[in-house]
Image (cartoon, rainbow, N blue to C red; front, side):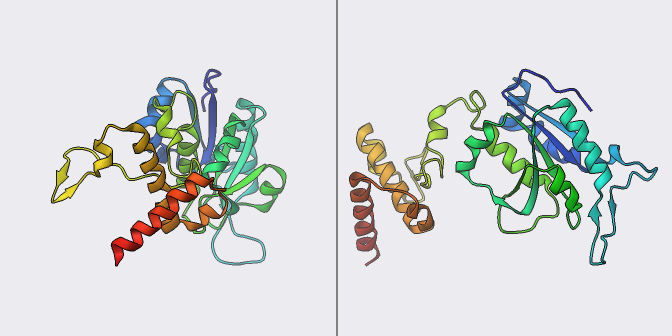
Length: 257
């Protein structure tokens, strides 16, 4: 259990029974580099270290019967108490299928919290009294059930961290991400120009950056209308965007005839 570094822009404490799982993000890639640069800090707390019995058990049978086991109140309470002692004024998040669905537009709000404690549930969940007395927010990464909260925590940490200044070098790549403006990303291509009789669109070879930007916007609008039309319901298109989308639909219809 390490004291937190005070330099990072955001830091996370994670309560889990499988701290080794987080090596997948802490030891590799962009998140690993951000930790080395002390832009972010990730500290894992093994819930079994807070068990009060020799078997280090952290679960028990639920009152009233039912399938499976629940994570017990006492070890979770002690772990959260310790996490708060090294991360004062932190927001405690329980990762649960019953939580709010995590989406791209939630990230900016979560970044402002700066200090987050994640509770990674297992088994059939956790004692409700922990949720009632210790949890500030419940979040879900989708309408499905995982074997534990660790993967969900990694997803949220990755999504949050990549928007922190300095984690990703190219600011433009973040601004053009799918969902960043309620649109899916446009199609991208690299060398060679032609592969298996498939060519890069001529507009991308033109050097006309204004036309390329318009083409990419049109592709984003078109892909979103086909794959995720629900996103466009919440987006107010200006006249130019609507024109580009209409032209995309006409061209698509023509090509399919």
